[in-house]
Amino acid sequence: MQVINLFEFDKYHKLPTTDVDGFKSYLNDVWKTRNRFRYEVDETEQEFSEEEQAIFGRNKQRFISFDGSFIRARNYVGFIQYEGQRINIYPKICKDKSPSSILKHLFYWLSYSKRIRFPFAQLPLDKEFADDWLEALIYIFAHQTEETLNNQPYQAYQEVTEESSFLRGRLAMNEYIKNNLSRGRYQYLYCTYEPFLFDNQFNRVVKYVTRLLLSVSSSTINQEKLNSILFLLDDVSDEYCQASDCDLVKLNPLYQELNVILEMCRMFLESTSISTNDSLNSNFCLLLPMEVIFEDFIFGFIEKHLPETKPKSQKETFLTNEQVFKMKTDIVLKNPRMIIDTKYKIRQHNADSKQGISQADMYQMLAYAYRRGVHNVLLIYPATRGDSAAHFTISDSLGNNPMINISAMDMEIYSDESLMDLEVALEMQLRKIIKPVME
Image (cartoon, rainbow, N blue to C red; front, top):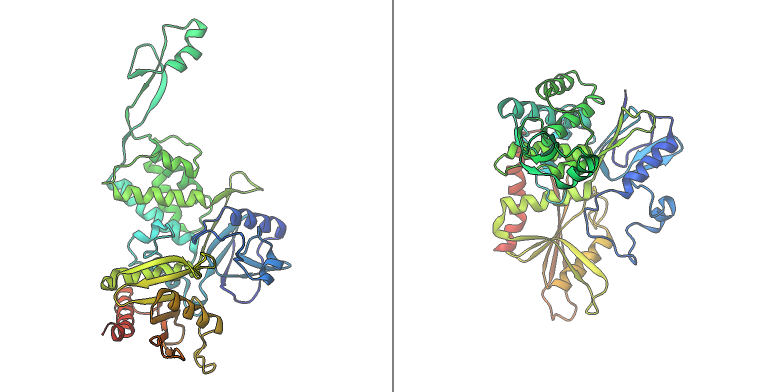
């Protein structure tokens, strides 16, 4: 299997597969069914610039840019498995880091996200994962599933409808009339009952997903674990499953480990399509927008570690009294009254006197502050080469309103130290800039 690793907005790379048109078509299909993590864009609004609209078109994928048979990653991270080829995409702020360490941090960031349902983020993060998106996800799934099924084999009451010579459970009237009574076989009954079975819907979904992952994994460790799961589920029927089949499984909330496994199965099934060249193979695609990951991480971190600030996320309102020109503030703090806006871009703070803050961002923050009656605004950028803060004040020329303070800070969301040390450093960094406002 040919694998290439890309970083967001990095240089162009040669596409592993020669089926460029098929690959584009596959990405277009994924784009149309993608999860819109933000509010739906109004028809009169532009989600992308005019230049991007001209290049891509509204219904064409924006995961990857193409230049003939060369590709360049955009602002989505994740992996694409297409016709036996695999593409990993990593964040631009982690350019010089090892893939295994990047994945560890990505899963950590996603553990704070509420908009992106990522079941792997609920699992322990104290292990070094594989240096490949898909293999890392397969490893976590296989490790968790094997351990859970060994310690807690799942049996459940499974509804079964079948022919019987005596009444068992309740009579399935429709099936009985259609298949037996209408044919003179009135002595045989169709019954619906619920035996306590190991061969149940949950185990069938797990077995199907395990076989699916075994067909794409090239890791010896993962293959061993997946085969071990198949051995444990040997008595379970082989059945084709889709993501919707996960909805048929009703688990007791007390079985938290089983719920996590089911959500992992759902994610794999939602990310899968059958290969056009081989019905036994599958194409996988899991791509997540880094802007949403970054924003959700910052909000989730503040909500957990600075609860006294009473944060609210994604507050939507209108700029004008006529209820037009929507505006969405990323994070609003109640104590102190402050607006926080996340900007997932690298700030060139030594470039000029603006310290890397764009004119458009400054106008946007001024509109937010004025509309909400807030006098303190904080812009948060991801740090790449140490942190740096910037402070600007805007005064009313007539002296009727208090000054508006707009600050910018770079947050170090990646660390070569432990994740625990990173959390401590992040909390100190946030308190350092919010505390003076509180006082």
